[in-house]
Length: 260
Image (tube, rainbow, N blue to C red; front, side, top):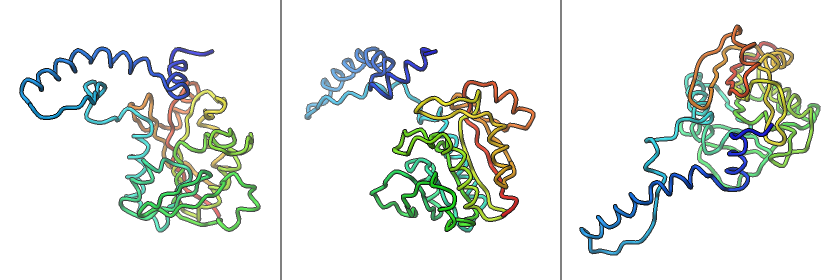
């Protein structure tokens, strides 16, 4: 079923048209014209037309986003933990990675290229979905690992990766192998009714994520949820069944490697 929210998302991200932006621009236009003539009456210098009609409707900053909350929360966790070596897989360069790079070095693995050198960031173009036997060189590679809003895309072809229904679990297993015993894995993925929304992402039952972690020698330390980009709370195991019935919630899992 295609909902109004889904149609709105398709219009913005795939067609480049946002009816809300158009409506707000039209609503702001009279105020812009009035402001322009007020300025002209009191200023004789050159003035060019550069309308910024949307900013009147915004707060001081954009905070109602899964990415905003996961980036700041997990960056603070890494800061407090002070790991020896932190590696990130596929998270936002212009968000979480640069947050972390502002206070420590971070190594980034991604299937996509990165052509710009960033202070504090060592970049390696690597397919973390690669067959596990070819991943031995990274066994026990670090004591701190993050993968934020990335694993759910593995194997769906969205970012140039191969279509592979097993890519999700193999990518997780490879990342788990990268951690030494006692290491910490920060993972965020959408949780809710289990499904694939091709080729955007997977949504997973949170209990299946925890089971997958346990099969790979990881134990759940904490789970934080973000609903609709603004409601942030700590979840318990008693909340898992309710989360599994949700349409879409961001789950920020913190796992600890219990065996090697």
